[in-house]
Length: 95
Length: 413
Length: 87
Figure (tube, rainbow over the protein chains, first blue to last red):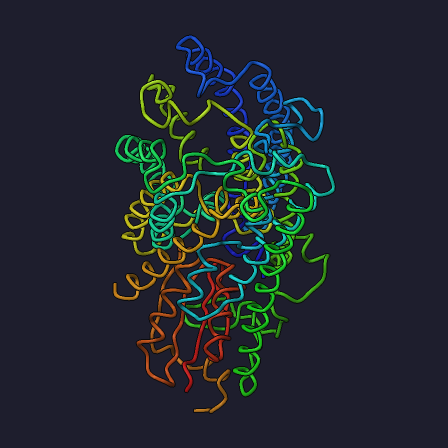
């Protein structure tokens, strides 16, 4: 039941959304690398072992997040590019 | 006789990168499938009271049954050490029943359980963004008001067990043993009736449909049929029901996943983390520690507010990060990509703006309820069937009661 | 006016409209069920929604349980789900 290319053109939200996804994944990784590492060190310095995450686990989290970030950025950019082409084509048809 | 072991033992020798990667993949699958199948525990329960339909509730029973059989099989086959199945079994107490009731009520008025809240938020539903925000606030409210009292009752055993683990493990309760035989019999005793019940409920509902439909046709006319309001005028075409069509339609996201297909995939998803995370971490699917707890905590860290140092519950129950963190993030990503590729993604605001207020208040109740119950419909109820525990039954009863009350309240509004 | 339920659904102006755009399950189904209870036999309810699962799964499920014929119309991104309340 999909309706594509209606009279008002390809929706702009479909062009912007994948970009936001890519930006989100970058932001998530950066947040993790900066703030979560600092928070973990803070927990260790206060000897709060209920919240402290040991170094191998935190390193594993950061490494996995980094690779997932790469994948999401690439997927996001591919979706963005496809959507942009459809958007420009729909504008050409209307125009 | 020695007590059963409470020392975790990994099923595989793997690094943390692999564990986080598997949990991330599992979250992606969970979000994708739940979005495509519109899988919602709250909807499964509200349907019982609004339309007398037990079809989706039956699917949930099948999910629980297959999960119990699956985890039991993995343990009996020796792939997962038995202690990794019961190690994280919850405490049971008054808070399980009260919390699940509050959660069920809140989720039903807000418009989604934790799983559906996340995948719908990722699909653009502003109602569920607001619910998520409310949930974070509710988690904080719980942490500062209820948790000190609740943890006291847990510690002292006031209407509560004082420990989880094998104490709440059904094979141990029934046979006073955690042997392969005990696990096998218990998982069969638990799993087979649940699956059978689920199939029965689904068949009974469909039989009811068939008898009611015998005198009435139910074709569906699609495309832009001429209608009020100046719609495009297109010759109407008779299309098959949305559940017709083949695998190609499923793969190309032209039609949603059926409830039973979604059920099977989700059960396998649970078994994936059960196997991969065994011995390392909470090896089940869990959502609310992250979306209600950690995300709120994370949002405040850049502002210099460290809840993990200052606030009850945050400082004694919530590690900075764990595999479920990445799982929940990827749940959102999977749901977003599924909704985007299927053309469903759109920012949607309820026409009746008061619904946003209701969603926020419901979200607060969701946050309070899940923290009281020590988990949500995923992380406690569904998970506990995989753990061969009994908390899941308590939660189910409480949640059903809460949903029932919410339906009655909404019928009077 | 024809007695065929589907023709009635296609041609008749709905007696009541329920706009649940922006809402997701279980709200469309719950609100529809509530509204149908208040309506008389023979009346047509039109539910306006942009939530595809409601149109694919929950609203048809509701109608099948109640034994009411229904019709789905699509207008851009929005669905008009019409139900005829029968005896």
